[in-house]
Amino acid sequence: MNTSKNASGIGDRPVRLGMLSMAHLHGWSYADCMARMPGVEFVGIYHENAEQGKQYAQHFGTRYFASVSELLDLVDGVVIASTNRRHEELVLAAVEKGKAALCEKPLAINAEAGARMVRAAREAGVPLFTAFPCRFIPSVERARQIIRSGRIGRVLAINGTNHGTMPGGWFTDPQEAGGGALIDHTVHVADLIRWFLDAEVTEVYAEYDRRLYDIPVEDCAILTMEIEGGIFATLDASWSRPRSFPFWGDVTMGIQGTAGVIRLDAFDQVMTLYSDKQMRPTWQFFGESADYRMIAEFARVIREGGPTQLATGLDGLRAAEVAFAAYEAGRRHEPVRLQPVSV
Image (cartoon, rainbow, N blue to C red; front, side, top):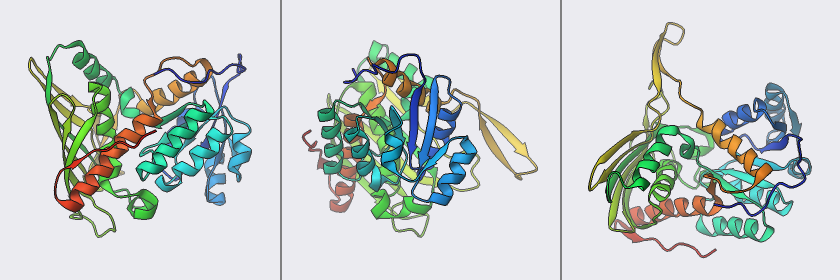
């Protein structure tokens, strides 16, 4: 896509980035990327809890801000890693001040909120992106290249997984998170399907439940999706990894075509480490950091503008709408046609 606003005026100085909230688990990684990235000045962190925010800022060698507005006045762009409920509030605050925003997924906890965010950014002429770092994993990029080159023929079906460890905390609060494992883990794979195929999900059937943990939200979900062009896909989006599991989870896809098959395991660049300190095996990832590449691209787009593989706000909304339809299908126990909200 082409960004709507170029970064004229930055010149040779570093791109100034800030964090709006560190509530999401991914916020720690994003902050670490900004703190060590050449050509980026990590201006500071706003966080809801002042004591924690000051500790985060000290750790990353930056400044703590008690005010969202004060931090926005000093940056070119922000990364938003709040609870899901606060995404709309913080995105709107950023775009109203003309600041580029990279918002953690899911973009919103309902379609109407997501549409308001996308419209506000478009009307302000400000880039809004959704944090889908899987787009920046080299094996994922290669799978997309193969699909779009036609080497496996016409895609017929996709079976995917996105498993993880139950994160606890606000992730299990339906008001703050908008749901549980279904919304948390569906959006990544839904985005990759759209990105690979340049096609929309048209219908969803889903079942979800609490089978593993005594929490207020679902911890497991199975989705079946119909996609434009007569393609269908399935997805296991569950918090099924125990805390003793050596790695947090996975993103896998089997992509069946008329002339070939792709087997994608996005995080299968690991070494198994046996440590007497931890008394259990762990997997040490040695591949390229998708988070780092995503943040670097966000900074580049702010400086230069132009085409990018970053997921837009609209991409984030469309991926989230798959999850919203899945919840409705699970409540009704019947397939649901997607009705994308107008933006």
